[in-house]
Image (cartoon, rainbow, N blue to C red; front, side, top):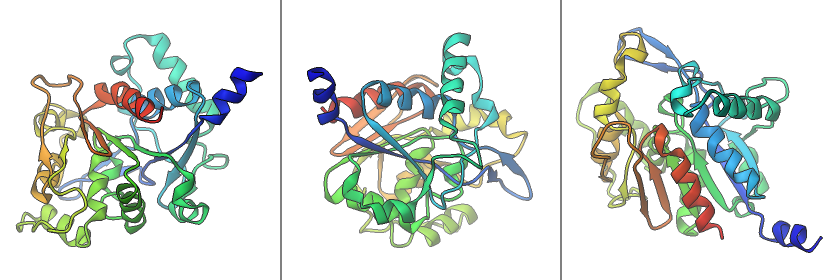
Length: 268
């Protein structure tokens, strides 16, 4: 009984924010079906819950997120058993079930109160490139955590959400998409932060997954243009995690476990 009470006393509430979108608009008329990456979401979630923490799931509008089918692959887990275990956990939690998903909206998160959450975690997949990067509610949430120096972690394409804290995020993204010369916001919350995100080299190596389509811009270019100090792993697909103040960023799917480990260490 004592150990159970002790564990509960130190339990934290980790807010996991994903995209509502199930696709990525590419250049021209091309569209890529996407969502979150299975391992980037479920490896950390499994670690959080096994450590005794509460996990709250959110998307901007409270819709059930979509799984990127490409991510349902043993190469992201090492073994078929691990893949099956994490997918079964996702199904058990009903995360992608439109009728029963526990996901809440970012408006609801604000109503509950940002102070009720101890850490933010944003997994990747290409979907955040459609909404999290300009969502004002996401920006308000991140700014609150920044001001409070609370754990803020994002992995793979997830770090693109950091752009939402720019007062000019929509104009900035439009300029990135058109190639008309995006102008950095001098007041951007994360200007001068060391960070990482899915690299340009990895985007080019994985371009075949987009069915021949081409992204409107790469997150590495956007975050660097905005004022982030970017760094990447020396080898493609190797884990790379960068910690700067409250911000924890992971480069790619292989970085998800290390990001989760650092979150748990910082919550101790």
